[in-house]
Length: 86
Image (tube, rainbow, N blue to C red; front, side, top):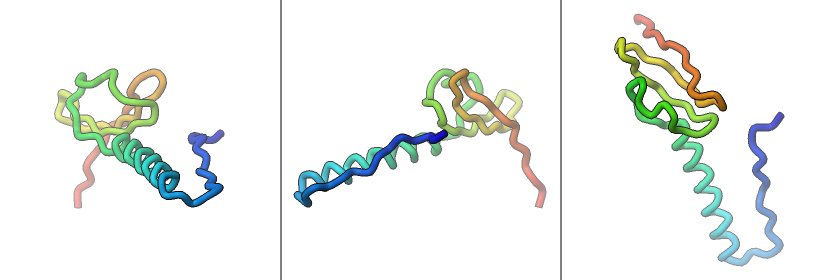
């Protein structure tokens, strides 16, 4: 099962407006990916219903511990993070 259904642009000619639209769309898609995985640390119970399917974030809960969360169709799933001593 594929996650993305993106298709490449097919150029029949090399006119500048077509290339500009193609690169604009490419950068829009890249920015969507960057924004989905680069969330600021949030506090638990804040933004519980925000985000799109597949987003990733780090959350600090009320016990001052950190969780890695991923947005699923049922809400945010989480896994506790632990610090390793050097």
